[in-house]
Image (cartoon, rainbow, N blue to C red):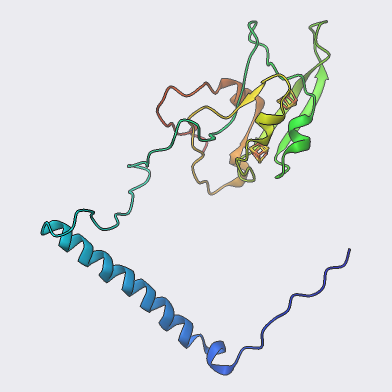
Amino acid sequence: MNRPPPIRRDLGLFARLYVGEIAKGLWITNWHFWRNLVQHALHAAGLRQAPGGVTVQYPEIRRFVPDRARFVHRLTKRENEAPRCVACMLCPSVCPAGCIHVEAEESPDPGIEKRPAVFNIDLSRCVFCGFCVEACPVDAIRMDTGIIPPASTNRFSMVITKEELLAHTASTGTLRSISAKY
Ligand code: SF4
Ligand code: SF4
């Protein structure tokens, strides 16, 4: 389907020079700076209960994240340590970001038809919606690891493999960083 071209406003000379926009940006930055400074000063003088805004010094300091937040995935295991996943392809089908790649192979267990030979998740594309967890019919994938994906300068390093997903464990209540490859 051909989309209509976007409607663009004609910009006048003043707008095209960006002078007004730069002045507006500087005004907003200054307004927040001075407002915050006054709030800190009033708080220090005991005239205001709440302090001004403080930048969180991430990653040294981390903000509270509720236990029910969605973290980096893990693949759950059976009692014999085999992956619980039966490579049904529901999670890659439902994933809105198309970031799950599963390749199936025959399972050596006669009671199970398939297992994943490859199970990769590209965290650089994942939107942490949790649809994969909801869609899984056998509770094979969870997002309860407590691992927050850090930023990376290499998007290929943000692809986590089946082995890494199986090595992830459930959260122990503290937030964790992911492996050194990031
Ligand atoms: S959380 Fe959402 S975006 Fe991320 S892998 Fe699962 S379904 Fe895809
Ligand atoms: S993790 Fe669950 S939904 Fe995804 S392929 Fe495996 S069994 Fe299917």
